[in-house]
Image (cartoon, rainbow, N blue to C red; front, top):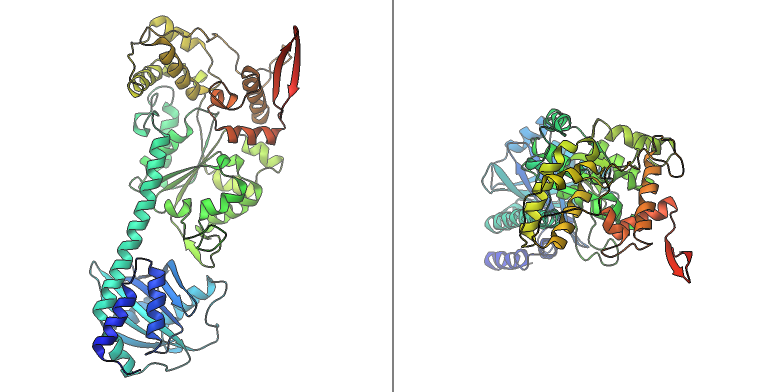
Length: 530
């Protein structure tokens, strides 16, 4: 095609800067360049000279453009070959003669379901290394099937685009960085809103008293990077301890992503954890990075890991073993560097024995277990904890507050707190609302209660209940106190400090029926409504 050099550069620039949708602009540019070069594939990448890694950012074929994020570690043999080429130089490569090209090709061949070029097929590549500073080299390359497809005229023409391609690679690199940061900030904002009113990780009350042994374990395991399994009853503060582990690790400047496994519908678990590609399913209008990608370089906290379905446990185990996965609808593996902390209020070993939880996954998670004692076993912390919640909630609701009296503190200490810290927080908030600035009292608390962990309904003798039995007993008690109501301020979900949908899922799992009591002509009728 006969066009002037100026027109060639102008048209290529227009293609590469036509929009912020990088995959579409690269696809548009590749279609234009096909008029001047043999071209079956085009891609942009960054070469990190300090780490000797290629990071591939986007590629385009004759059918479409694709955003990718592939990091390839090259061998010392390939490194020597790369350093034989200067920045801003245009070079011709063939698969059979270049160690670098062979290593890159093998990576994509092994990590792609339908590689564009066959394993035994020869191909040629024309690439330009670009000086983008910061010990980084940008890059743009074209690939064509066959041997010796490029010549000196092709090199001269590609050299004309040096400045245009340098700016395009920099734009792509910064755009990807901004997208990742925005996703992380949005996630952190959601997490902070959810935690509004909770104690911050570095302000854990009882760190030097009731939780002293727990915090010692946190200090031991924090810097190691090993998986941690946190166990304890509902409402004991497992997320706060997980955050403390994160803060004591070398990853403390990275993201801390908190996931409630019990709140994600089974059909959405894969797309939420691992993300999805554009067009993977109806409604997937763009690429979405899952929680594991968002946690890259930091920590992912999987709360209620016992609620994870068996089908998802298999995929999760693979991620733990190899730290790589495929997005839904994708055909390339995504590698991540993530520390995993899991938590549960269930007896996972018992679930393993009942084939409700995978044994190999339990061994993988149970590297360093930390058990958080219930509030009834560390009552020494109750006065300080109540005082904190009192001040914080009063400030949050713009209400006057007074210090707790000795009698009120005694009431709180005598109660056994089956709902643990979450129940204490709710009791304080309720008393503030009702008290309207007066000295707080807790008339609805009955002291010296027996925890459901040790009490078996209908029997005078006591025995240690299993986690499942305790959960069934506790939910049943909450439903009885709520007169069969799940939602609302007086519902069982509010009493238990749970999302109503999560409570319904637990009830279905344990076969708990909702019973509503109705008084008719002095006779009590029990009607099952679920």
